[in-house]
Amino acid sequence: MNAFVAALRARLGEAGCLTDGDLSAYETDWRKRYPGRALAVARPASTDEVAAVLKLCHEHRVAVVPQGGNTGLVGGSTPDDSGQQLVLSLQRMRRIRAVDGANASLTAEAGCVLGEVQAAAAQAGWLFPLSLAAEGSCTLGGNLATNAGGTQVLRYGNARELCLGLEVVTAQGEVWHGLSGLRKDNTGYDLRDLFIGSEGTLGVITAATVKLYPQPRERLTALAACPSLDAAVALLSRARAAAGDALTGFEVMSRATLALVARELPALPQPLPAAAWTVLLELSDAESAAHAQGVFERLLEGALESGVVTDAAIAQNLQQAQSFWHLRESIPLAQAQAGLNIKHDISLPVSAIPGFVAEMDAQLTAYQRGIEVINFGHLGDGNLHYNVQAPQGVAPAAFLAAHEAAINAQVYDAVQRRGGSISAEHGIGRLKREELAARKDPTALALMRSIKRALDPLNLLNPGRVL
Image (cartoon, rainbow, N blue to C red; front, side):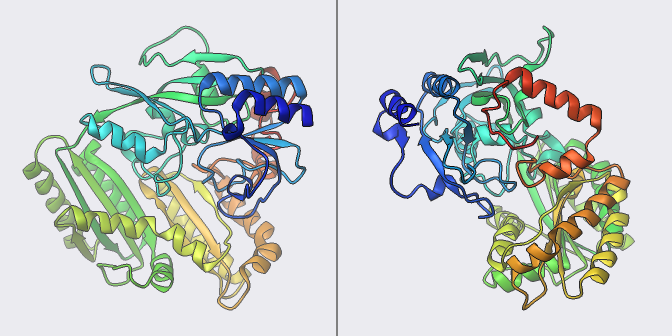
């Protein structure tokens, strides 16, 4: 391995090859569940350098773990503890290569922080709508490698729907130049979609061309209290009928979830009194402020009159709207402060969600007295973060060790019975690898393994993740 590291350092220089000092930022995942030990950390600054690194890895048979912002939640971007895996960090590749207004597209390198991509689009008068809590640190390459979702999937789709083209380096160090920016290209297999969501197991994304949208003329945000989850689903139906594509966000938060935020982050304002469910909804209108305001007010007035909503607060300015969103986006931080928890990033048909929640809440409460179900997420696209916190006074790590497998089985069995998915937007990584093997259609798994063998026959790209 000394020869490999020497060759790596010779190609990338001292700044591009780290072996000494504190490497914990690269070796430990965000949840601190998968600490590892890297052979080295490669920090290439160009696609040519990424290609050179992967050629060296192929020549020396060194496994490589691609890494963006290292904000993932399933243990997919950190090395194991063998000290034999190379971390390939894309964080130095941060150029916005082009903004094409006529094509409504932007091309950026994989290491660009999501917030930087949003800002570059806004500076040019456009909107890049991918938005999630980690947008100040997650990277575009990581977003695409995991097919990230976020808060505006309801209107704009996942990262996959926002991507027009990719530049990818293969396991052998070859570069696929697929940054065409085309919306129609019917010339064979769609390689772009193959690499999106593959979690670095098939190739390393080095740049992407993404879709841009017009900036909305008006953006309206409100919090609404609902007496039940059925009522929240009914409000979603009303909002869709009233606003159509203007409905860009529809988030739901349970009473226990906001109580946790109040406990862990007491300085954070909560505009509405506690309710069984609180909905955060947003409309983005391209017509006019008056039109958007009228739609919003009629929607909430009708919901209040019918009892679907019991209370509501409409943001009166941008600062208030940002505070509403900050409340929603602070839930993961509150959970992190409370300690390790059993996370479930699940998706279900929206119509099946109330029944699932009622069944699981009752079942888990009976299973372990005192547990806290922290349930929140993107109700508009059927994605819940159905998380389980240890009872008060019980050490979170001990609770996970004793109960995670049993609780996962109960939740995933209920999801599977309703035709849902065990991973809506976080990916598989190491955390859900065995669950995928046990629950995925056998034919689908066989096809996935065939693709992996074809593109990475030496199993050097993120081995032990996903499959």
